[in-house]
Amino acid sequence: MQKRCDEEAVFVVEGPKMAAEALASGFTVRTVCATAEWKAESGKWEEYYEVSQAELERLSNFKSPNQVWMLVERERRAEVGERGSALVLALDRVQDPGNVGTMLRTADWFGIRHVVCSRDTASCYNPKVVQASMGAVFRTWVEYVDLAEWLAASGLPVYGASLQGRPFTELEKPERGVLVIGNESAGISEAVMRQVTHPVLIPNIGGTAESLNASVAAGILMCEFGGKN
Image 1 (cartoon, rainbow, N blue to C red):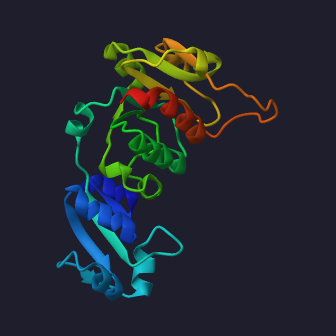
Image 2: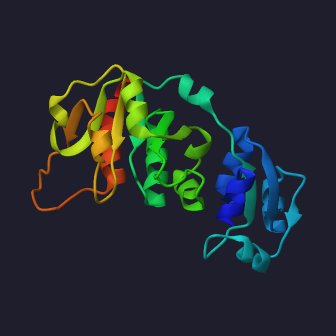
């Protein structure tokens, strides 16, 4: 299914909440398969295929599908990023779809509209990313690039989460900048780290936990550095 979606430049949206986000987003909805219950409750979409719960289960990526399954066309939303949050979020080799989706959701919360990813970061169109984003995938410009090259060309100060960095409380908030979050276990790659101008540390106040979840670390730093957006 995912390969076919990639070929046709569509992605899957499931459940009433995400369906409502899709319909309100301005993205083109290509196909809707839904139960009669969803149609009766939503009343928002005329052209759809009515399916049984059993049929929905065969379509769904989830163990407990919920009323509606959609195919939505992928669209570049550069104008969202160009409207300009001061902070750009960059993800380097972040591979867990749940983490990527959570980071998009958190970026959306702090008004960060531009997310730049290395090409080996989990796709923002992965069904688990879409679901975890809670609609942020419709409101955020996500692009996949050679991240080291992009950072080098950006001309922006680059803040990278690192155990060798300065505590974030000691750093002044940038007017504009890029915040880099690295791989869940390996951190920021060497090539990307060479572009980091400000390594940032989240102090381990408790002194016992080995590390933070990548999306939690991202949330702390977005809260700290995203305040000027």
